[in-house]
Length: 152
Image 1 (cartoon, rainbow, N blue to C red):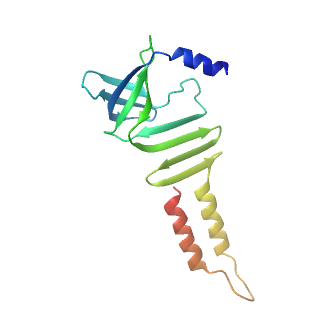
Image 2: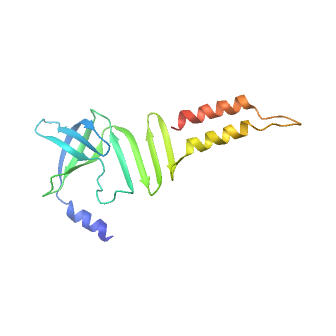
Image 3: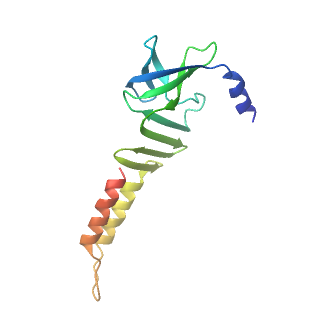
């Protein structure tokens, strides 16, 4: 609770500006105020700056409108609201999730859920049945293709 109280006290009189996203990098973006009065470089996409290993970042779409905030006495700004999100990224320890228009990615300790599922399907497709019904390899491949459209 102390950390939350410190943050609230630290950001009690925020300067709030509506802006348009000009460009993006991995963890920052460049925006211009909608009234054209100011341009802001190196605007943080993550409002929590103290924690580098655990983070949640929403990437605004280029050209979209965002609301940025600047704390009194500070020179850095952070995005606090979005009109359109292009990608969402979440990391907690060695677990990473990413969601965008291409699909969903989940990794843990460098191992991808997509790769594990594809490896499983490939191994199941290798099963040979001597007596009775064998697996339907064509259907398993269809399932694999459906999964690959969801996962990236």
